[in-house]
Image (cartoon, rainbow, N blue to C red; front, side, top):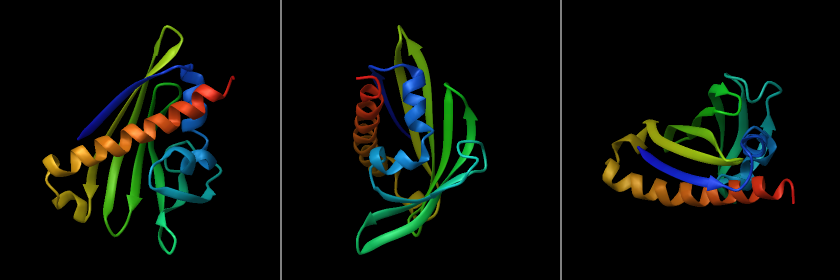
Length: 145
């Protein structure tokens, strides 16, 4: 499992405003290129964001579904990018003196990507997720500027 953490200079509320805005997903998730639809019940469990992954003309249409949601504390997503597979991503937030300490954990759960040894895939996920958290932080920190 890959784990990244970051202190975001914004409130937990501002961070979760970005995390739970399905239409902003492609702005901060590395690899997501466009949002095709956000189901009306998002971010409640069972609801999905329909997105595309990759770069034109090699786009894969797929979905990310909420597995668990505890407002201002936890967002667990099942992310799909077939034919490579599926993964589980957790965002866990804690208030730290008015700022948000955010932990992002990701692991593959289904498909061909599960055959890749953790020692190979975790460093790649770690780098990608560091950039994802950087983008998320920029959006959250800019909400009140």
